[in-house]
Amino acid sequence: MSLPRQTILVVEDEAAIAETITYALQTEGFAPVWKTTGRDALAVLAAQPVALVVLDVGLPDRSGLDVCRELRKRHTVPVIFLTARSGEVDKIVGLELGADDYLAKPFSPRELTARIRAVLRRSNGTAAAGAAPAGWRHDEAKCRISFRGQSLDLTRNEYRLLAVLLAAPGRVFSRDQLMAAAWDDPGAAFDRTVDAHIKTLRAKLRAAAPDADPIVTHRGMGYSLREE
Ligand code: CA
Image 1 (cartoon, helix red, strand yellow):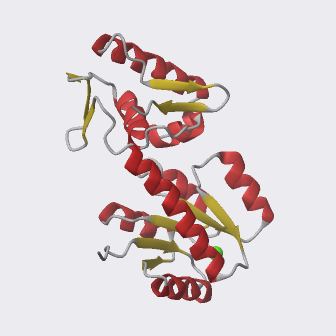
Image 2: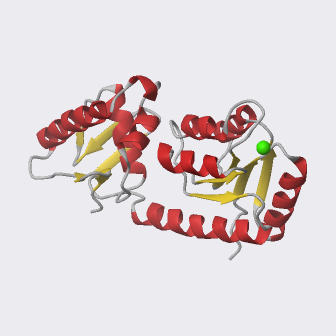
């Protein structure tokens, strides 16, 4: 059985590094797509399925951190950051951007492909386990979610929040991650806003199925959707 080659989006403005990476990816059986700006990277993500993004923090048009924040609004694709300075690592970890891993320059291509394989294994595992949790139906074209046969009447933010949780059942999302994914302007919202929307979401789910409590609170960490 031969699987189609998985697309890896490489966002890196230094040609020498990008060439080394894309060559290593091709050799390892991936289909790399190379872009040098955040803008072009987001355009690729909007246009085609991507298995994983390798994202340089220092890009010419905007920081890789901003690009990650932007792509998290629409995509759950795994992201591995490339960093040039240790201060950047602190930011990636501190901002909880939903990065799956990071690698400090200089690194060997072999190390990067090993990390990519590890992240893909992890995320494919999650997706397979939670592809269609029992009781849920998500019609992405119509932006409708139903639970136990009841169509839910959701506000825009409630819908986006629930869609993020539904895409990866069992995965714990921090409030920052949920906010980045569900709000157009996360900077303008506060942690409590996520809590408030989870509360109204829970009330609507209770109305649809009184005996179910599908959203799990992880104290000090965030929320996840119960894996049925
Ligand atoms: Ca750079």
